[in-house]
Image 1 (cartoon, rainbow over the protein chains, first blue to last red):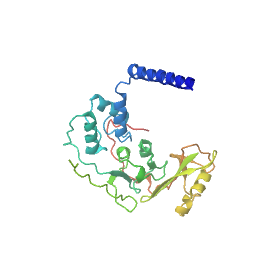
Image 2: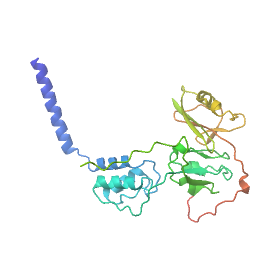
Image 3: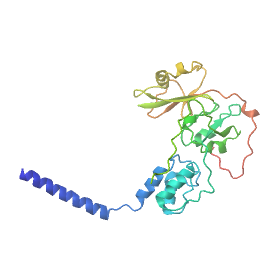
Image 4: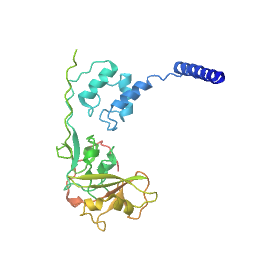
Length: 179
Length: 94
Protein backbone atom coordinates (compact mmCIF):
# COMPACT_ATOMS: atom_id res chain seq x y z
CA UNK A 1 0.00 0.00 0.00
CA UNK A 2 2.60 2.52 1.09
CA UNK A 3 4.89 1.44 -1.71
CA UNK A 4 2.14 2.00 -4.25
CA UNK A 5 1.31 5.48 -2.94
CA UNK A 6 4.96 6.44 -2.75
CA UNK A 7 5.85 5.20 -6.23
CA UNK A 8 2.84 6.97 -7.80
CA UNK A 9 3.66 10.18 -5.94
CA UNK A 10 7.29 10.03 -7.10
CA UNK A 11 6.16 9.27 -10.64
CA UNK A 12 3.72 12.19 -10.60
CA UNK A 13 6.28 14.59 -9.21
CA UNK A 14 8.96 13.48 -11.67
CA UNK A 15 6.73 13.73 -14.72
CA UNK A 16 5.28 17.03 -13.51
CA UNK A 17 8.75 18.50 -13.19
CA UNK A 18 9.67 17.19 -16.64
CA UNK A 19 6.56 18.80 -18.18
CA UNK A 20 7.30 22.04 -16.37
CA UNK A 21 10.85 22.19 -17.67
CA UNK A 22 9.76 21.13 -21.15
CA UNK A 23 7.17 23.90 -21.41
CA UNK A 24 9.82 26.42 -20.36
CA UNK A 25 12.82 25.30 -22.40
CA UNK A 26 11.14 23.73 -25.47
CA UNK A 27 8.64 26.51 -26.11
CA UNK A 28 7.37 26.74 -29.73
CA UNK A 29 7.75 30.27 -31.02
CA UNK A 30 4.64 31.62 -32.80
CA UNK A 31 4.06 28.24 -34.48
CA UNK A 32 0.76 27.76 -32.71
CA UNK A 33 -0.63 31.03 -34.03
CA UNK A 34 0.37 30.17 -37.59
CA UNK A 35 -1.31 26.81 -37.24
CA UNK A 36 -4.50 28.37 -35.84
CA UNK A 37 -4.62 30.86 -38.70
CA UNK A 38 -4.00 28.25 -41.34
CA UNK A 39 -6.86 26.23 -39.82
CA UNK A 40 -9.12 29.25 -40.36
CA UNK A 41 -8.12 29.69 -44.01
CA UNK A 42 -10.05 27.67 -46.61
CA UNK A 43 -7.16 25.28 -47.22
CA UNK A 44 -7.82 24.86 -50.93
CA UNK A 45 -4.35 26.21 -51.86
CA UNK A 46 -5.90 28.31 -54.65
CA UNK A 47 -3.19 30.99 -54.57
CA UNK A 48 -5.51 33.96 -55.12
CA UNK A 49 -3.76 35.81 -52.28
CA UNK A 50 -0.45 35.72 -54.15
CA UNK A 51 1.15 33.19 -51.80
CA UNK A 52 1.84 29.63 -52.98
CA UNK A 53 -0.75 28.18 -50.61
CA UNK A 54 -2.65 28.63 -47.38
CA UNK A 55 0.32 27.71 -45.16
CA UNK A 56 2.66 30.48 -46.38
CA UNK A 57 -0.31 32.88 -46.35
CA UNK A 58 -0.97 32.05 -42.71
CA UNK A 59 2.68 32.67 -41.88
CA UNK A 60 2.56 36.04 -43.61
CA UNK A 61 -0.64 37.07 -41.82
CA UNK A 62 0.75 35.98 -38.47
CA UNK A 63 3.99 37.87 -39.14
CA UNK A 64 2.14 40.98 -40.24
CA UNK A 65 3.54 41.01 -43.81
CA UNK A 66 0.08 40.46 -45.28
CA UNK A 67 -3.23 42.17 -44.44
CA UNK A 68 -6.05 40.16 -42.90
CA UNK A 69 -8.09 40.87 -46.02
CA UNK A 70 -5.80 38.79 -48.22
CA UNK A 71 -8.12 35.83 -48.83
CA UNK A 72 -10.74 36.46 -51.55
CA UNK A 73 -12.59 33.15 -51.13
CA UNK A 74 -12.82 33.72 -47.37
CA UNK A 75 -14.50 37.08 -47.88
CA UNK A 76 -15.24 39.72 -45.21
CA UNK A 77 -16.27 37.14 -42.62
CA UNK A 78 -12.83 35.52 -42.66
CA UNK A 79 -11.14 38.95 -42.64
CA UNK A 80 -13.12 39.91 -39.53
CA UNK A 81 -12.33 36.62 -37.82
CA UNK A 82 -8.62 37.05 -38.58
CA UNK A 83 -8.70 40.67 -37.36
CA UNK A 84 -10.31 39.53 -34.09
CA UNK A 85 -7.73 36.81 -33.68
CA UNK A 86 -4.80 39.18 -34.19
CA UNK A 87 -6.41 42.14 -32.44
CA UNK A 88 -6.08 44.49 -35.42
CA UNK A 89 -8.71 46.47 -37.27
CA UNK A 90 -9.74 45.25 -40.68
CA UNK A 91 -10.41 47.57 -43.60
CA UNK A 92 -13.26 45.83 -45.40
CA UNK A 93 -13.95 48.61 -47.91
CA UNK A 94 -12.22 46.77 -50.74
CA UNK A 95 -13.95 43.48 -50.10
CA UNK A 96 -17.31 42.44 -51.37
CA UNK A 97 -19.32 39.57 -50.05
CA UNK A 98 -18.13 36.62 -52.05
CA UNK A 99 -20.84 35.00 -54.11
CA UNK A 100 -19.96 31.34 -54.39
CA UNK A 101 -19.08 30.50 -57.95
CA UNK A 102 -18.18 27.23 -59.57
CA UNK A 103 -16.57 26.49 -62.90
CA UNK A 104 -18.74 25.28 -65.74
CA UNK A 105 -17.53 23.87 -69.03
CA UNK A 106 -19.28 24.55 -72.31
CA UNK A 107 -19.05 21.13 -73.91
CA UNK A 108 -19.45 22.51 -77.43
CA UNK A 109 -16.11 24.26 -77.01
CA UNK A 110 -14.18 21.64 -75.02
CA UNK A 111 -11.47 20.07 -77.16
CA UNK A 112 -10.20 17.66 -74.51
CA UNK A 113 -6.79 19.29 -74.13
CA UNK A 114 -6.39 18.29 -70.42
CA UNK A 115 -4.90 21.69 -69.47
CA UNK A 116 -7.63 22.53 -66.98
CA UNK A 117 -7.70 19.32 -65.02
CA UNK A 118 -3.94 19.42 -64.44
CA UNK A 119 -4.42 22.76 -62.70
CA UNK A 120 -7.36 21.80 -60.48
CA UNK A 121 -6.29 21.78 -56.79
CA UNK A 122 -9.31 19.76 -55.64
CA UNK A 123 -9.58 17.09 -58.38
CA UNK A 124 -12.95 18.56 -59.29
CA UNK A 125 -12.25 18.15 -63.02
CA UNK A 126 -12.86 14.85 -64.74
CA UNK A 127 -11.39 14.43 -68.18
CA UNK A 128 -8.71 12.90 -70.35
CA UNK A 129 -7.08 13.50 -73.69
CA UNK A 130 -9.73 14.10 -76.39
CA UNK A 131 -12.52 13.41 -73.88
CA UNK A 132 -14.97 15.99 -72.63
CA UNK A 133 -13.92 17.59 -69.37
CA UNK A 134 -16.57 18.14 -66.73
CA UNK A 135 -16.49 20.00 -63.44
CA UNK A 136 -17.82 18.12 -60.44
CA UNK A 137 -19.76 20.97 -58.90
CA UNK A 138 -19.63 19.71 -55.33
CA UNK A 139 -15.83 19.50 -55.41
CA UNK A 140 -15.19 22.88 -57.12
CA UNK A 141 -13.99 25.75 -54.94
CA UNK A 142 -14.28 28.37 -57.69
CA UNK A 143 -10.60 29.28 -57.63
CA UNK A 144 -10.61 30.01 -61.37
CA UNK A 145 -7.30 28.36 -62.24
CA UNK A 146 -8.96 26.31 -65.00
CA UNK A 147 -10.50 29.44 -66.51
CA UNK A 148 -7.10 31.03 -67.15
CA UNK A 149 -5.60 28.06 -68.97
CA UNK A 150 -8.50 27.02 -71.21
CA UNK A 151 -7.37 27.71 -74.80
CA UNK A 152 -10.92 27.88 -76.16
CA UNK A 153 -12.56 29.85 -73.34
CA UNK A 154 -14.96 27.00 -72.70
CA UNK A 155 -14.57 27.23 -68.91
CA UNK A 156 -16.47 29.96 -67.11
CA UNK A 157 -17.14 30.72 -63.48
CA UNK A 158 -20.84 30.85 -62.81
CA UNK A 159 -22.92 31.48 -59.75
CA UNK A 160 -24.07 28.16 -58.51
CA UNK A 161 -27.67 27.64 -59.57
CA UNK A 162 -29.94 26.84 -56.64
CA UNK A 163 -31.40 23.40 -57.22
CA UNK A 164 -33.13 20.89 -55.01
CA UNK A 165 -29.76 19.22 -54.45
CA UNK A 166 -27.78 22.35 -53.58
CA UNK A 167 -30.31 24.21 -51.44
CA UNK A 168 -29.50 24.45 -47.74
CA UNK A 169 -31.63 25.76 -44.93
CA UNK A 170 -30.24 29.24 -44.26
CA UNK A 171 -28.30 29.68 -41.04
CA UNK A 172 -30.21 31.45 -38.24
CA UNK A 173 -29.45 35.15 -37.94
CA UNK A 174 -27.32 36.12 -35.01
CA UNK A 175 -29.25 38.03 -32.38
CA UNK A 176 -27.58 41.03 -30.77
CA UNK A 177 -26.02 39.79 -27.55
CA UNK A 178 -28.31 40.37 -24.59
CA UNK A 179 -26.58 42.57 -22.04
CA UNK B 1 -8.94 -0.17 -49.96
CA UNK B 2 -10.94 2.88 -50.92
CA UNK B 3 -11.16 4.05 -54.52
CA UNK B 4 -13.41 6.51 -56.31
CA UNK B 5 -15.63 6.26 -59.34
CA UNK B 6 -16.76 9.26 -61.30
CA UNK B 7 -19.08 10.01 -64.18
CA UNK B 8 -20.13 13.50 -65.07
CA UNK B 9 -22.79 15.12 -67.20
CA UNK B 10 -23.16 18.91 -67.48
CA UNK B 11 -26.05 18.95 -65.03
CA UNK B 12 -25.31 15.95 -62.86
CA UNK B 13 -21.96 14.73 -61.59
CA UNK B 14 -21.24 11.66 -59.52
CA UNK B 15 -18.10 10.97 -57.49
CA UNK B 16 -18.60 7.82 -55.43
CA UNK B 17 -16.30 6.15 -52.94
CA UNK B 18 -16.14 2.38 -53.24
CA UNK B 19 -14.57 -0.08 -50.82
CA UNK B 20 -12.86 -2.92 -52.73
CA UNK B 21 -10.32 -5.65 -52.04
CA UNK B 22 -6.63 -5.21 -52.83
CA UNK B 23 -5.86 -5.95 -56.46
CA UNK B 24 -9.28 -4.92 -57.72
CA UNK B 25 -9.45 -3.93 -61.38
CA UNK B 26 -11.21 -1.03 -63.05
CA UNK B 27 -13.98 -3.39 -64.14
CA UNK B 28 -14.55 -4.68 -60.56
CA UNK B 29 -14.85 -1.16 -59.22
CA UNK B 30 -17.28 -0.02 -61.89
CA UNK B 31 -19.50 -3.05 -61.27
CA UNK B 32 -19.26 -2.69 -57.51
CA UNK B 33 -20.21 1.00 -57.59
CA UNK B 34 -23.54 0.41 -59.34
CA UNK B 35 -22.84 3.43 -61.55
CA UNK B 36 -24.02 1.51 -64.62
CA UNK B 37 -27.48 1.16 -63.07
CA UNK B 38 -27.57 4.88 -62.23
CA UNK B 39 -26.58 5.84 -65.76
CA UNK B 40 -27.91 3.13 -68.11
CA UNK B 41 -26.62 5.15 -71.08
CA UNK B 42 -22.99 4.33 -70.25
CA UNK B 43 -21.57 1.95 -72.85
CA UNK B 44 -18.22 0.62 -71.71
CA UNK B 45 -17.49 -0.84 -75.14
CA UNK B 46 -17.37 2.61 -76.74
CA UNK B 47 -16.72 5.05 -73.89
CA UNK B 48 -13.16 5.49 -72.69
CA UNK B 49 -12.17 4.93 -69.08
CA UNK B 50 -9.27 6.28 -67.12
CA UNK B 51 -7.69 6.90 -63.75
CA UNK B 52 -7.09 10.56 -62.86
CA UNK B 53 -6.92 11.60 -66.49
CA UNK B 54 -4.78 8.72 -67.75
CA UNK B 55 -6.67 6.39 -70.06
CA UNK B 56 -6.87 2.86 -68.66
CA UNK B 57 -8.07 -0.57 -69.71
CA UNK B 58 -10.84 -2.43 -67.87
CA UNK B 59 -8.39 -4.99 -66.46
CA UNK B 60 -5.98 -2.43 -64.98
CA UNK B 61 -5.28 -3.08 -61.29
CA UNK B 62 -5.99 -0.12 -59.03
CA UNK B 63 -4.20 1.39 -56.08
CA UNK B 64 -5.57 2.95 -52.93
CA UNK B 65 -7.11 6.35 -53.59
CA UNK B 66 -7.36 6.04 -57.37
CA UNK B 67 -10.38 7.55 -59.07
CA UNK B 68 -11.86 5.60 -61.96
CA UNK B 69 -13.37 8.00 -64.46
CA UNK B 70 -15.77 7.22 -67.27
CA UNK B 71 -15.45 9.74 -70.08
CA UNK B 72 -17.52 10.95 -72.97
CA UNK B 73 -15.78 11.78 -76.26
CA UNK B 74 -15.51 15.41 -77.36
CA UNK B 75 -18.25 16.57 -79.68
CA UNK B 76 -16.31 19.12 -81.72
CA UNK B 77 -13.46 18.92 -84.16
CA UNK B 78 -10.61 20.67 -82.32
CA UNK B 79 -9.44 22.26 -85.60
CA UNK B 80 -12.67 24.19 -85.98
CA UNK B 81 -12.67 25.74 -82.50
CA UNK B 82 -11.38 29.27 -82.19
CA UNK B 83 -8.38 29.57 -79.88
CA UNK B 84 -7.80 32.31 -77.41
CA UNK B 85 -4.92 34.60 -78.34
CA UNK B 86 -1.81 33.57 -76.42
CA UNK B 87 -0.94 36.14 -73.82
CA UNK B 88 2.77 36.93 -74.14
CA UNK B 89 4.67 35.89 -71.04
CA UNK B 90 1.89 33.60 -69.84
CA UNK B 91 3.29 30.34 -68.63
CA UNK B 92 2.19 27.16 -70.29
CA UNK B 93 2.21 23.77 -68.63
CA UNK B 94 2.83 21.67 -71.71
